[in-house]
Image 1: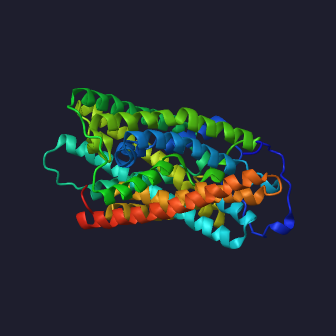
Image 2: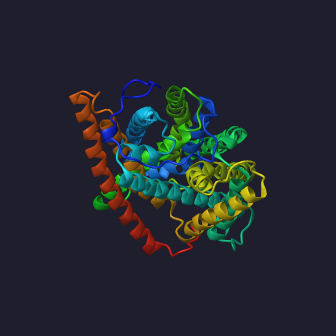
Image 3: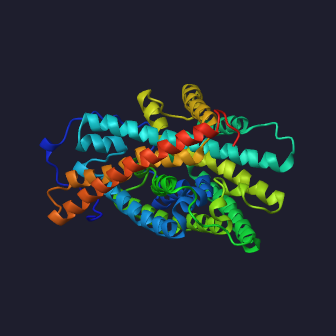
Length: 439
């Protein structure tokens, strides 16, 4: 993967294109590697983990799910390390994913990378609003038999709450204490899900662990499960996160990645495996809907999942916020009238759109699969390996170049297959559920 060297790389100016890169309106180089590690860990241990028993383990089974999660962890660490080590390529910091792609390839790649990243982050945030809505609905169901309020209403409440948090938090580095609070929230719903699932599993008759469906549908669901694997570990915005870390930026970012992929993945493994063991192929897309136990315990877990989602969503929305804040020169005090009113209008509009899409199509498993297929695969695996070959082509051995090209071809094929499988899944679900469905 090359040496983690913070010094400037050898540059060949004739090989690069001129891309006008604006200075950022947000803070950079302020955060410790540990804070960055918690940002990364907050992302992978968000409420999405409550769906991995169904989204990963059910379509892949015990062998495929366990091996797949371990392989996805190793491959994702490798791919993210490639991107992290290109942060100072050419003797300059590339604080946005599109900046790095534009410096290496040119203007078209700059625009394409920005489009892919926007789709990736937008769909992730749609999923977060759905999750937050599901958490609120789960609380509602515990205490009423009428069920007059449907999921879309809770999605709207969740979107409004996420909007308030976005307005109050000006940039990614401002999360600070919220990352610790987010970790506490994550531990609450993860521990509750594991303990209650384990209790249910110990009392239940033998479960069915066969991959459900016909032979043809099993092929598509397996491919969809593979795209969910890569979705679980990758942000699609690593340069933006790395921009916040203090110097030496490469070494500190690698520490953050090791923290994420060695310590941060353990809760994810635990909840995915225990949930699948307890419920088998009947595991719910939102695990807290499957567990039985005291209402107050499940309420606390759902409240924690709801609140943590608002924090996690802010991480994945921050590249969009940074873009518009920089474009319109939103600097200085976060409480200045112009800055505050701008955040209310722009971030409010962005989250209103996100909430509207979430309410129309609340098929969270489909979003996970499709996001992994059309954007996470290209951004994290295909582009990372190809950029590294292009940037380091004068330094890599022939064997290393072949290795990276094999990764490019393999993940390109997997991306196409996963996209087809995900579209099929959406078509099937669209026949089952109406828009604004109450799942």
